[in-house]
Image (tube, rainbow, N blue to C red; front, side, top):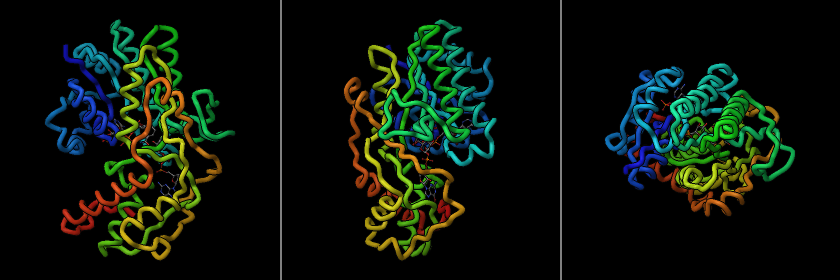
Amino acid sequence: MTKTALITGITGQDGYYLSHLMLGKGYRVVGLIPPTRQSSIVKLGDLAERVEIYSVDLTDAAALTQAVEQLQPTEIYNLAAPSFVPASWDDPLGTLDLITGTATRLLSATRQLGLATRFYQASSSEIFGDVQSAPQSEETPFRPKNPYGAAKLHAHWTMVHHRDRYGLFACSGILYNHESPRRPPQFVTRKITLAAAAIKLGLRDRLSIGNLDAKRDWGFAGDHVEAMWRMLQAATAEDYVIGTGKLHTVRDLVSAAFSCVGLDWQKYVETDPELVREDEHFQLVADPSKAMRNLNWKPQVRFEQLVETMVQADLKRLVANNLSTVGIHS
Ligand code: NAP
Ligand code: G4F
């Protein structure tokens, strides 16, 4: 029988890579998209015709339950979230409601309907927040430092409660930063690769950036969605830390991106104190050994390859757009 995968946040970066993976495995893929966000379907590009769309407001518990009852999914991937961390300070309650609320509503629906649906919660390294040690594993204490991290932690605990109390097959992937040419331009990787490409093509001459010494564990989105799927195929429902285990600075990122286009980054990059986040002294880096051991998962794409792919994609896109500046964000 054909398996059905239900995905919230299907129009985001991970939604695209996960849909691609699931379609390749023969799943019927259904995206739950709110009526107000139907215009985002265009972001699915070549997959728009291959996935099904179910229009539903993710904040409407009854409508979500009806969707789950009708679709009878084999697996649910709950990816929808306002995912740009600084924005969560502007709307903490909206962030909490969408992230925690959607997880709770979907888990409750699965439980009430008595389904054997397997549930994936898109958690984040931001739940570790102000870490006291590095790298972080599934045993590391949670100390979120922003409304986004707090909402993701609440969603995580809600999932754990449903697993422990009701026996649902549910798990969290605690994912570190993962990137691709589909990453929106406000995130630092894409901001940099887009700027390097635009400067190379003579479309702009500066890039303003925040803290060059900030560090992250950057992997490829395609690798990380593979881990999501593997978690739901495991014999037991468990949570996993997913990342490359390697730290790089924003300076490394800028240097790698500009060297892809043969430019000296120091001539074009300026720092803007307004873009520096407070209190970023911590080192968020994964210890993915549990996923490597239990899921036989490991990242395939190296940092330099990832940056190169993103820069080349941005060059191609800008050239294809007739060198227009559409889509360039400063
Ligand atoms: P993304 O590209 O920002 O996509 C987010 C998705 O959520 C989009 O489909 C977006 O719809 C939808 N969404 C946002 N706000 C919404 C709202 N108020 N109501 C309904 N839908 C809403 O994020 P991603 O990079 O694919 O990440 C997928 C998930 O993993 C997210 O939950 C994110 O928090 C989490 N995560 C990501 C990373 C990472 O490094 N990428 C790391 C750890 C965890 P539109 O397309 O209409 O905007
Ligand atoms: O690309 P970022 O904005 O991603 P951030 O905040 O780490 O969050 C991403 O990863 C999380 C998982 O670890 C996800 F949960 C979350 O949804 C999202 O996908 O910033 C990365 C780093 C930060 O240290 C930031 O301070 O880059 C630093 N940075 C330095 N200058 C900058 C800039 N970030 C942005 N966006 N813009 C800058 O100019």
